[in-house]
Structures are given as structure tokens and as C-alpha cells.
Amino acid sequence: MERAAVFDVDGTLVDTNHLHVVTWWEAFRQAGHHVPMHAVHRAIGLGSTDLIAHVLGEDRDEDQDSALSAAHKSLYGQYFDRLPALADAGALLRRLHGDGRRVVLATSASGAELSALRRALDADEAITATASADDVEEGKPAPEPVEHALELAGVPAERAVFVGDTVWDMRAGRRAGVRCVALLCGGIPRADLEEAGAQAVYADPAALLAGLEDSPLA
Image (cartoon, rainbow, N blue to C red; front, side):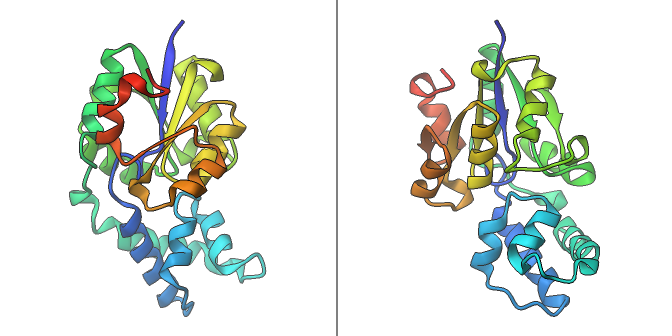
């Protein structure tokens, strides 16, 4: 039977989490919301509406959501031509593809942002499919993004592993019934990732690649 390796992208394969923190912080600041960066960081990995709700609360003026999201997208878009892939991220995807894994990306990014992330990875030949924000009704931590990735791969949950860097990733993978591997390069503590469902934790894609034969992806 086929096997699948499902990957989050931001903070997992491409070093973008802190760019998102700064650009969301600035979008909030421009709208008159003074929020601490650590609060924004803890929300990275959620879709835009859920991130705004997480930071500002459910009692916020929801009429501002679209403008906040657009401001973040504009600010973050300035970096599209120089998004940095994490060390060995592309090599990891190519190795898994070469080993017979169906590699699927499950990300809240879409459109030009997703294209920029894929350019940074430079591993299109290894990627079977992408489940983007445009393809699902609910983002992480709902299981739908991971479940959709499994559908695209044509692989059942028990034959797949999900790799991410946030508690939202781990919760989504756990709810979808897949084994979860966490990476620390997104800036979230090991204990939080393990509590959320990570069965193994590595520093970054390079460390996972180096330890691949002893990992849940073996």
C-alpha cells in the first residue's frame, strides 16, 4: 500500500513564522490594536479569521477582520521574493518521494503566497499535491486540512504521518487520526507540542532528515 507524508509549510519547511508575527503585529498596530508579539506568535498556524479571534477575542469588531487580513497579506507580500527555506527542507521532501512516499502539503496559505512558498522549497518534483486554504471550510486545528491531504494522496490515516511546527498542527493531525511529528523551528516549546499530540520531536527538517530511518516516517 502507498504511504503519505503530509507537511505543514510555514515554520515547518520555510522559515516564515517570525515574518508572520511581525507583519500581523504591524497590521494590528495600524488598526489601533496594541498586542504583544508573543500573543501573535502563539496564534501563528491558524487561518486569518481564527488568528484574529485568538488574538483579539470573540467580542471584537468582526467588521475589521477583512481589513486586518488584507493589511497582513500586503505587508507579508513584500517578502515573497526572498522567503527562506529551512535547511534541507527540499532535500527531505525529495528523499521521502524517492523512498515511495506521497508528499502532500497541508497549509493555510493559498494563491501567490503558496506559490512563493513552493518556489522557496524548490522541490516541486517531490510534491504529489497541495491542500490549501482554498480547499477546506475549516482550517487547523480542525482535522479537515489533513483529511483533505489524505484524500489527495489516496492514503488512509494509518498509512500517513503529519509533520508540523505548531500545537494547531498537532491537534489537527491527531483529530485526523494520523501520527504526528513536530519540529521546533517554528518556535513552539517541545512540551507544548508533545501535549498537543506529537509522537516525535526534531529540531528542524535537517535533523529529521538525518534521523529519518529511526523516525515515524521510516
